Length: 288
Ligand code: G1P
Image (cartoon, rainbow, N blue to C red; front, side, top):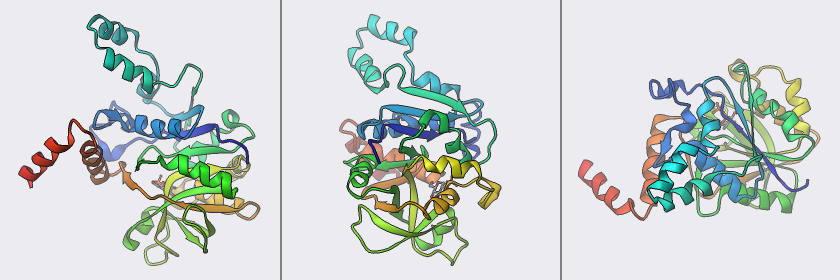
């Protein structure tokens, strides 16, 4: 496989679990401390050397496109007020013009279908997929270490982390053979196994490096779990002709698609911040 330059961000989901907060605001724009969830994930991809950011959006997701654009009025006001630090931070967060692309999924047919919508923009090269709900907190960004492992071991690479066995039915699960934790050979993958049937407790964490062959398979993929076109099902087929490795993520995964995961992520990221950490610690002690 060649250099991983492009990343796909499926952001079409409705976010019904966060209503009414997500009635007019995309769930990906909810803040974790003071950065939208999607900005955290784009930061991870940029730190991994990604050059093209492909967003699979839907209706009412315009705020994401606006977020990754210059806001002239805001910039002018900040300049007039000599807020140079804020200006510099906004500039730093923004991928350069031409590095972002947006297309609509049109119908909510599942994650596999969302990724398939990127086929023309990705073309014939390996690419990354990052699920914005899943924040990967660590000193070395998850996608960066996955790209390094992929350069060494080749094949398709799936980020995984350990979850309690009783939660395995909520995730894609992989069964692995022996090897280094950065690239364990995958023997089997299953999307949301029924409780008590999971082959392991290694869950797919929402980070993927995939070969472009996946697009052809996704185009013919029948609906799977939940009546949706599942990315995992197409990966199972691709595994018949290409190797797959599991990369065990060493940091902390926050599933911000759940209320508890979202709240925990806010606390965990705030605790890491110099200007907030100690005050928050004290505030939490008082609350508890
Ligand atoms: C998707 C994937 C699943 C993965 C999960 C991580 O499921 O299909 O394999 O474990 O993301 O969040 P979803 O959460 O979209 O149902």
